[in-house]
Amino acid sequence: MFGDEAMRMRSMIAAGIVGLLVIAGLAWGQSGARAGSAKKIEEEWKGIAAETKGRVGVAALVIETGEKASLNGAGRYPTQSVYKLPISMALMRMVDEGKISLDRVVDVRPENMAPAGKGSPIRDKFPSGTKMTVRELMRYTLMESDGTASDVLLRLAGGSEAVTKYLRSVGVKDWVVANSEKDMDWKTQYEDWCTPEAAVELLVALDASRKPGGAVSVLGREVIMGFLEASQTGAKRIRGMLPEGTVVADKTGTSGTQEGKTAATNDIGLVTLKDGKHMAIAVFVSDARADGEVREGVIAKITRKAWEEMGK
Image (cartoon, rainbow, N blue to C red; front, side, top):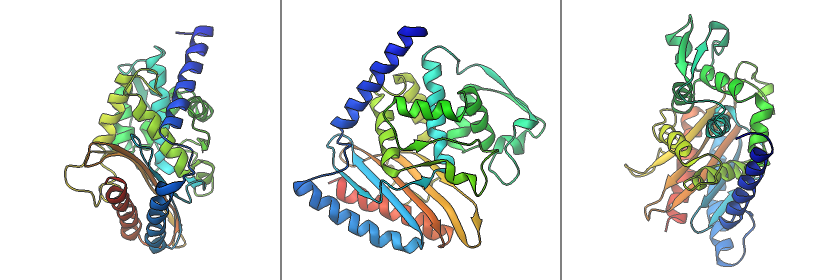
């Protein structure tokens, strides 16, 4: 689908998603009893967040009821590998439009490899290069947070500006994709940012794709959710303190540490609550001086508190 017809379809999809965000309650102000409940959760989050000795931003929403809470949720936080979710979703939109196939075989050459010091199982297994389908590259990107795979998908998606444009097309305003993994260093990582509230908006848009007219197709959502649910990178974060068997689909992001400060320890995801409803939650820990165990533990505690209080 191309030309004016494609433009009209994208406009209709964007309008539909914005409508779903409104229905889900994503104007972050609240009143009445819900405001009091949110305030209680936010105060408890604030106490937990202090353990990081850094900046913490949180947003959470129960999609079916609109119940929500936000702590510093409009602040800007470096995304690190969390941005691999919108990259994958933008490329999936291209698959949906027939512009590329998940079965397309792509050359992954040595010059495409993520630099040393950045996570890339592909680089470690195939230093001389390899060939992979788009589906395999997406699996590496979302399940193993592979920097090489992410950069190849980013190129296929049209680059950082195209992914940011995709985010706008699905109603997510406060998220910027600026750099490839190759170009991201300690300084430039802050150019790739989002707000926790924007991350929840993207998760809601992904969840809304259970039905036609979402951010990706129904089948596209199934592929992405399958990879996120099988993710291998966040066992001690959103998943860390939830009951065994809880279904979680998440994407993490982690920076390096310089002079005792870690720029990013993040996790965003969709959590199935005990009553079958779904919670979208995003936790970003930035510029923190606590060690990795504490930072991950804070994400787990914040999620557990949301699961307990918002899942009643």
